[in-house]
Length: 347
Image (tube, rainbow, N blue to C red; front, side, top):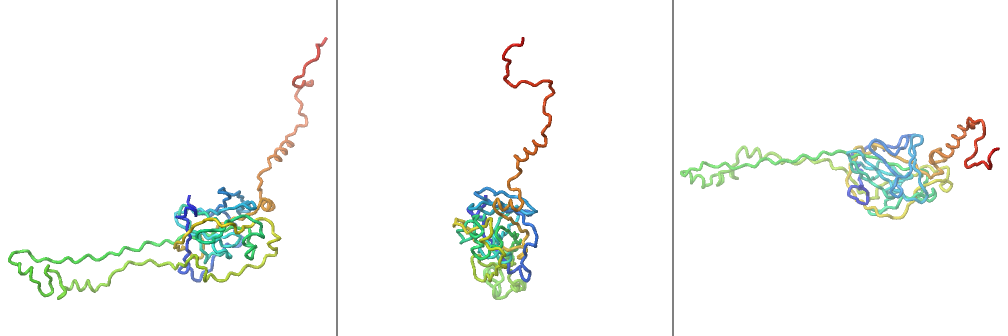
């Protein structure tokens, strides 16, 4: 299993956006688009104590039932043959820098081809994360940092990697082998005495060069075609991130809202390191996954059948529908009960 804890394939991915994103606007979820936990070759899960949390489909969206105080982990699956960068948000906050989530300039986690990655919490450093833990809305990280409007939603934007073909291998021109004179005894003086422009081995020397050597020396040296270097920025660099304006204040304050949020939990070990990653499309993700979560009462109030069918009520209804008004057997006289005996013999 490939997780952040064994760490060789679960890495940060630098979204190199400067070269690919120029004037295009950042993509966002279309208004009214349903949030589902899977799309194409990608999938997201909520794990509580290593077990997938109860998940329900309702009105075309995916809902997860959480429990107050439970710690959870997000697992992103990549069933494609291409590496992807997953940019995640919880309660409208980016899981790496904790600021309002958006797609274009945020960093993400690298998910290997046919692999998966577990995200343990809000990133504190390269080595630690603050655990995701279900809490009340007032105690959620989003409410404590200024805005609880988006509490109750998890999002994953998936960016496949741009394919960069390897640079061609530079081939050097073949070496110039010297031409030797005929080896005859009468030409010993000719072979040993250097002449103007010819060295002792009969090769072309510095005194006089041949036209062939001049033409080859005039050619510029070949160099391998360098692949375009992606403009990568440090993932842990917080400078130049820009100001983020919070949304309009919600009509209902966070302290008046019921249900679950996600708090900034205890520090847990979560080692990562940085790698270079170039998105195939800098501003438009290939897929957007999502989940909405709440506790039992909150999901039940929305009309979600969190308890499953009521078998006791169904049995009672079935008994009443099949009740027989004349259940007596086809007998002329009353049948004695089990164990009944006559007290005396008839005379």
